[in-house]
Length: 314
Ligand SMILES: Cc1cc2nc3c(=O)[nH]c(=O)nc-3n(C[C@H](O)[C@H](O)[C@H](O)COP(=O)(O)O)c2cc1C
Image (tube, rainbow, N blue to C red; front, side, top):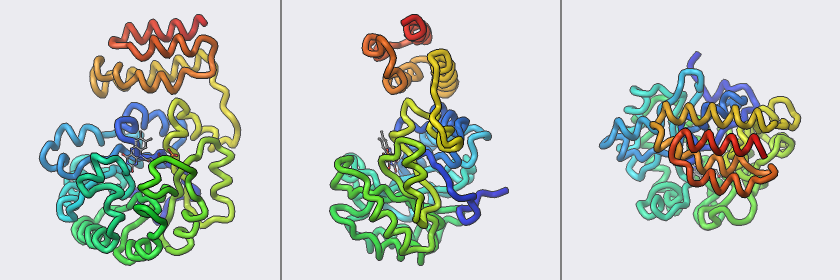
């Protein structure tokens, strides 16, 4: 059955888009652990059109990962729509999401990501062009605003344009990652619109995930950093209980992820990427500091096996 935001089974627990992280190897593991919907990292609309093969690789997924949402960023509605149609035709994702949240200067400097929230009238025009030219499932992921929480009317405009869903990270762009995600503001947005709204920010345990849904119109919760080194958070949410991962199980999970990385991007790149994941996975163990130091230097699969041996023997 074709994915449709309007018929999702509530509540949904969603893996957030994270650049350089939510590519196939990590994303598929989160899905294995029970994430209901998963997002790719943001892809540049421009790059989708001009460097298609390499860019679409970042958004590619396994059939069993579905539903996968591919996220795009850009500043030109027609260009984003063109990229959306190309992604849709080639990868056939469940939907396309537009990034109105990224605060990184290299993105906002090009008037993309959260910079679009500086002028919500212009952002509305851009999203309307995408909506008019792309007929697949279309969602938006945004922050509360550029410098202030001032997006309630904008959300209504997005609904009127006919987007299908919205996810909201409860910080302004100016805040970066400081302070706490403002779930009161997220709920004000959810109360203002008929759109399915997913709340996001600082959810790091299954208890908090459910807590955020209490007395709320939200259809789900999106988790980013809480899944790093902790993809089983989605199983914890599903089972409503803490998962205790033994060292042996951890070694299996890491090996599985590393193998998927090697298949996805070759040994060298895979090991470079695995360094940061090892940093997140290897904590709260005796000798973690020493093992992490070794992990940061792996270049080959054999280096990884050495690190795993160390982990097992400590
Ligand atoms: C390393 C990293 C990369 C991110 N990349 C993206 C991205 O590509 N697109 C996007 O919309 N948000 C991106 N985000 C923001 C997350 O999706 C999420 O909104 C934010 O981290 C807050 O949720 P959390 O507290 O659950 O992590 C990124 C966040 C991190 C930490």
